Every structure is written in C-alpha cells, then in structure tokens.
Length: 253
Ligand code: PGA
Image (cartoon, rainbow, N blue to C red; front, side, top):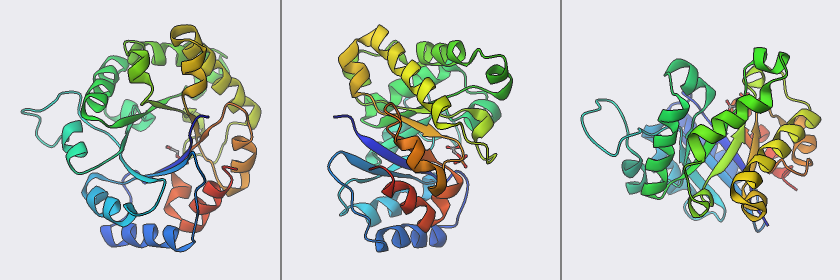
C-alpha cells in the first residue's frame, strides 16, 4: 500500500570522498529493497550529482536535498532553488527540519512556500514536524504538530499531497540519544494520520508515508517500524555509518 522509506540525512557532514565511500559501502552490502520500499540519501548540495550517479542503477534508491528556497529564482545570493535541484535529477527534498526552523528562522508560512516550490518543480518534500521538549512536557504536542501541518501543508490539493512524505521528529530526540518510545511514536503518527484523514479523507491518510526521526538506530528501528503508523525513518547520525544505516533499512520488514 503506502511506501516504506528510510531516508538518511547527512546534515553538514563528510567530504565528497567520504560521502562517495559511504554510498559505495552501503551498496556493497548488497542491500535489496522489496517492492514499495525506498532508500533516500540526503546529502549536502555539492554531492547530489555524484550521489545520483552512484545510485542511478539501483532500484528503489533515491537522492534528496536538505533544503530549498521559498522563491522560484532571483537575487538570493547563496541560496538554491527547487528547480535547480530538479535539473540535476534530485528526487526528494527535506523541508522544515527542526535545525532549519531553529537556526534559520524557518516559519510554517515560509515552509508552505518551500513546499509549493518543491512540488511545482517535481521534487517530493519530506516535510518535518515535531515538538520541542517543553511542549512534550506540557503534553500539548498534538496541537503543536497539528498547527505545523495546517499552516504548511493544508493549502495543498489532495493530488499534490500524494507527493508529500511527512517526518515526525520530536526535537528532544534529535541527536540526543533519547528516542521516542515506540508507543509515543505510534500515538503521534496515528494522530497525524487522523488529522490528514479529517482534512483530505481516509484514502489520502492511508496513502501518506509518515517517517519517524530522532535517534533511530539499528537497536530500536525494528520496534519503531513495527508500529502500524510508522512507515520508516529519517535517520541523522546513524546514516553516516554504512553498517548502521543498512541495518536500519533491513528492519523495514
Ligand atoms: P538523529 O537525527 O538520527 O541524529 O537523531 C535525525 C534528524 O535530525 O533527522
């Protein structure tokens, strides 16, 4: 039914040679994806062309960028447009990662525009949402995430939503070693799906892939991926180690 996806987010790590080695090491494990499974490698911008060339002949392997600009083109020195990414055959783009929201002041409204640019160019957004620790402690995470979805995605048509992947990443679990428990992940993923169902209908909700992100590793991936509403993972730290990343992919089931 819906796609199962493991996406690796390299963030601002590795040289080109190290990245190339990592991809070759991942491919050398002979990892085979079954029908409906995808692996997306999200590299820094300068490595996307190389990553695409390395992965091109491997069924189910795709490349993703980690950001794109909210405008189509123009005088935005240092920025990269969605259309540029598409022109080098990039498949996916991570949008709204909590690090972008925090360090680069990306608002829900700005992300709505980035989502539009990505879709208009033919890129599939991996749209990140998730609450900070104080919101989790106050137990208001559902309302917080619902607002992120509403303000950045709900202007889309049901047809456009077909190309969107959602990643739930509780900020308190990113890079901290703290993982949401499988029950916490499942609760939020089911909530997100119910929100999508309320807005777009049951079919759209059943179709959308919702990934978990935040200290996912080989040791907890199986339990997380076994949750009925968890359709894979967005992996940071563990995506930089070929053995860990492939072990996580192998838990997709
Ligand atoms: P982590 O990062 O796996 O290192 O916690 C996840 C992410 O930021 O996407």
